[in-house]
Length: 357
Image (cartoon, rainbow, N blue to C red; front, side, top):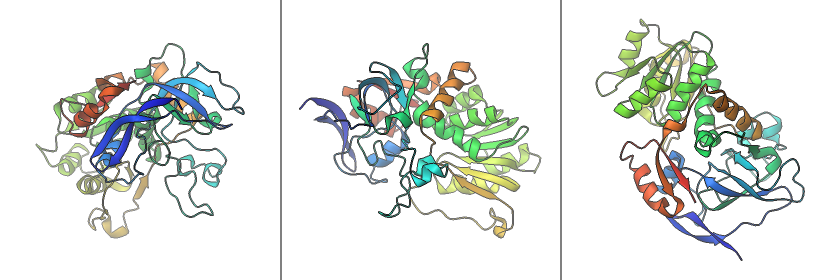
């Protein structure tokens, strides 16, 4: 049986490069040869054992590649075509999909409650930090890459860009809104860009790493608050003349940033939470105004599917957002363990890495 190289979860603390069989495909699937992928913060949660996955699973959920082989029932695509697939790969026909919540595909079935069911790559099936990946339900998930767009231009679409933009969409940002974005990692930066696209006219980014602060300004922030120099809650209240923000976006996944995101809201404001939390969250009584502040707290799992990917690539092609500067380091798949060490420890000013087989 033909083999391929893949980044495999062995146990908490160990993801290693090893060989696995190249996947077989069924009638509705597609085999995609990976040309570029990347490492996500969620992969680091998996590495640390903070998010459980099966031992032996191939990790990764952000594929850019070329169709190697199509299932017998797949129509509208051709072998050799450049494509991406979202980190979320909905079937298109589950109860969750038909209710318009594609990312929760598979939840609430007769086999039991299964939230996050739409996230399959590197979670419930083999992912794309490998030479090949099997894309399920190909006609619902494969999005052709427009001519003229490079791998690195579209690399953020499958997850980081989709997730960051979704925070702005879930927060229902309106023209003229003031928005605070806590943390300017890759997702937070895309949230900042998404808030600008949605019509926010005052965006306050909270960050302390100088390179990320500068990138936040470059991608759309009007103000950047260094939380090591000033209390971000007090500073945001000052910047808004005591009014608070219409929408706050939490893009880190920590108790302290969640609380701060709640405390800076105006009455009736919305907290859009993107962080992946590794422990129980507490809602502070003062920030929650004892439950009487008309606040909305929204959580979002990255939207997927081919139409979402098409729209994001249209944004890239239009020139309204350029995510290429987020790729700060490049590795071959053979160097994946080195890439994890760098990205997991956030060394050398890393934002995102591009990994090429």
